[in-house]
Image (cartoon, rainbow, N blue to C red; front, side):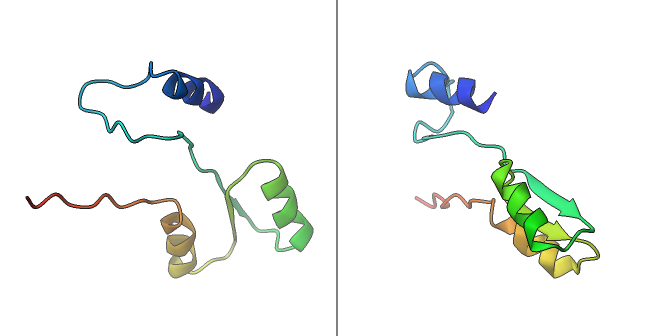
Length: 79
């Protein structure tokens, strides 16, 4: 789905009225959550296309930091 959406964006066919015209590429992040703490599992998750990894049990701050990497804040327009 990402490939198809990105192809449409690159061809100029994905924009709608009111959408940000600066979209370069669309990507839905995937965060793995597992009780496995072996380094090989982490590497396998990334190899399979996941964007991040949190091993259980985890602290709230660990999950927040892992998710925050995928959030992009838009500059406010206070003109």
